[in-house]
Length: 119
Image (cartoon, rainbow, N blue to C red; front, side, top):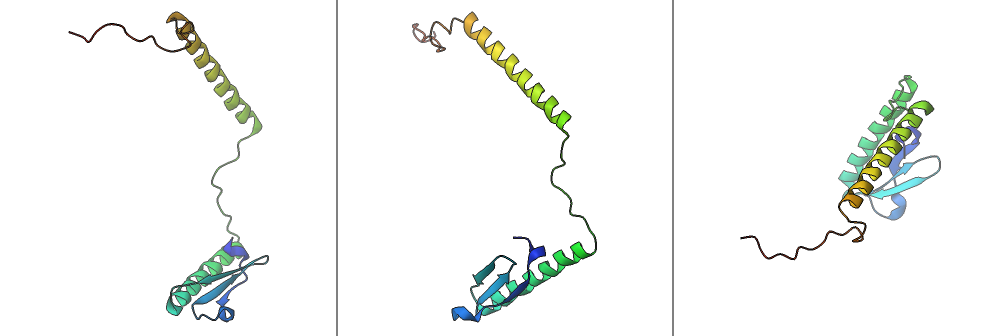
């Protein structure tokens, strides 16, 4: 839930507890309960502060920063091509090593040593 869309933070007396409160959004109402009435008021004040801050940043014209910049299609294609090239090269090396070491004849398992312990 975005606090920018929050409509209200208010007490909720319908539950029969003085420590219940609501966070009202356009599509939902979140009903919460704190450990004590004092904690509920602390939470409500904190949430109201965040709500006002979020709404004032929207009204002041501040633009939120994005976490990850969008890459253009050409850059994505180049990275995909590079990954495929590295994967193909790596698989080629693994296949060559397996054939050179005789692992293909052994179902890609190393042969057990038949010698005794080292002297």
